[in-house]
Image (tube, rainbow, N blue to C red; front, top):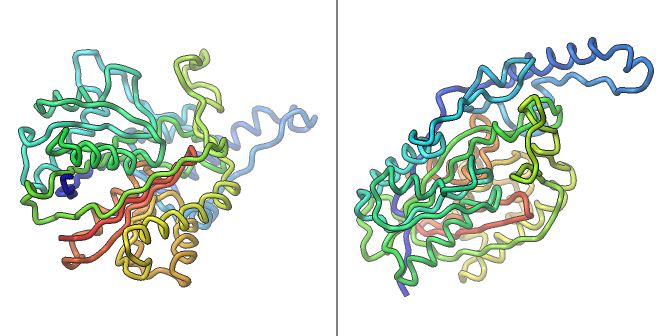
Length: 373
């Protein structure tokens, strides 16, 4: 069975960023306008008045200070509060394809590879901009890869599940190397008018090149030591949008067709699941949690990550043990743990051990144990 390594990673970061201060100014303007427009109904008890938010609330609840987005103008328009991203003609590259190609080219460069060395492309993300043809096949063609591609969705765990699929393809001999790409335009399925969640998400795209170990020549190699996946159905994180339901006449859609979650339940249920999953995956690799030098955790919520590492280590993790990119990128769904890995890997010594872990809707959890070689 072929051994597998991650030989390169790439990151595409959008040009626009929204600070908490900007976001709150827009949100509170919307709240005040809504309450003024519905003052009579609110006074009569027919409608509940909306509550303003604050920068302090966002940072305490999530640890997020800003987020990158594909479009800033539409989000910060109190009368719209939806990204303004024009549709493209069928003969133009899709926006997800553009993001993916940028990230993939960096991953290939870091790995010292070209498109000719790649046999497959997996586009794995929480929301795809169309049903078909697959974004992965479009990306494959745009990069000039002679092979195959397909899309997959396991919400925030899409990247780690994509890594497992790539590992299986390489181990079996079906492919020499596979690109796993995670284009996340999370701003498009976020309800920017919901006080409890409007600050959560940001946009980004990551790429991971996995190769047969005996073929890899990169200076950035991490051996795949163990991979474990787990799913358990829950409605606590949900998005009901699909081809069987469509946007209303405004073109914006109903609230339940956007991201929604019961945050307290998610926190209570997912943290112990993730901690147990990571511990079990590490131990089944013949290691102990204390052997792990770095945890690249899903970047959803700072408080969740602090609790998960505390559950595993029996103490608070040091900043370099569990690096965060949440403060500047926010929750980028499947891309989050890979952004952390991409930005915080080069300083590790040969032989260092690390764990990539994602968790989210499903519930879905993916763990990948790595060793720097």
